Length: 462
Image 1 (tube, rainbow, N blue to C red):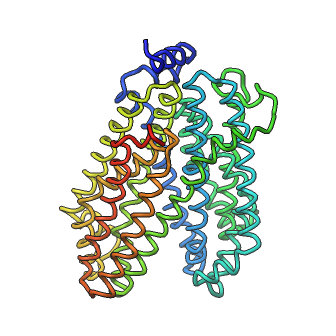
Image 2: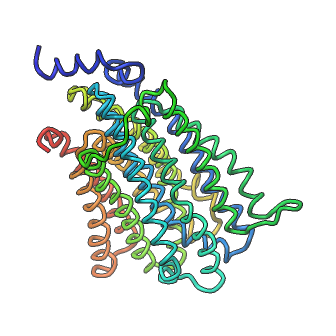
Image 3: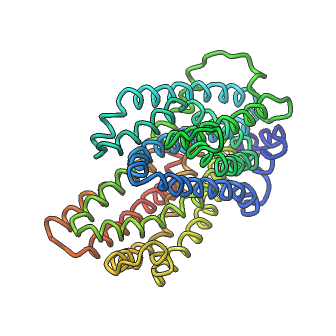
């Protein structure tokens, strides 16, 4: 028996329950079993984002504009806590459990909570101290700026609630339990749907808090979810137990999380930078162009729960098998998951490319807006499968602990849009369709760069 096989056999014999399934069960059914609750839970989160816009829109344009200013920063915190650092925590815990190192998994969970607390404090201090100049620089004025500060001050004062709930969920996912975090997402969404309007508008003797009420509801639901997840990790039956190991600061465990989490946390910054660059360049074609692009590109947010749902499952599945020395199975899981996500997002993209009105007509009846958005979907929609593939491979790379090429892919995507788009729009004064081709090419380069690196053995050589 080879050394790798011996390591895998030892790890498999030590593993129990969900970890054993990830090491031994058929890949495709295991992937769907892990991913399905994630996808459902994340769709619930997507519903909440839209619902908040609907509720706050009833307070008027200033309230909606104010919360819109906060949205990119609140999403950055969410993406870092759930995806960047959260994904790294899931991967680190899963690798430890896959290698039969239960005590290390317990200690990694403790260190993950320390990182969450520190980063929550950073977000809180920066946004409470610099919120006004940040939102003013983004264009906030008058009542809209006041609304932004009212919402932001409450939300970021409770940043610890958001960070802890997401990192606790990541720990639980690392043990192969995708159901409980997803149930918490769905339960939180349901509570928020009821609590948010009550706190925003008031009821009976309860005075409404306005935009701050929506932020309060977010923090309350995060606290509830965090408390349930914490209770699970403190009980004696959980695969990872927070109090089983005495607390002791170990820098190598912090590094194990941050060497993946730090570069992964840059990805949402680069992704939002790509969107900002595309929006700025499209703005040269006029207001209708911005509106048409905004509506069409919103379809990409529908794909995020799909990619993230399968992606977090891939992170745990790949990390567990890498920890057990089963590199070949980890690679098979990666390509299987990538193919599934590419097929789903590709199908959505092809339908949108062939029948753009199915999406566009839900948001506008302005002919100029509809025509511009339809032109975007006809070109870019055909590459949505590659967009989904790139995202899936990104999450799998988190599981493998190999983040150089995914980060390089994100940088390349931004560079293609920013540099290529500037040349097409400003230097060549090309029509918008030429810029759409560049955006589609950025999706292709993102996926092919990560996929090519994995195929050529970057996980082995890194």
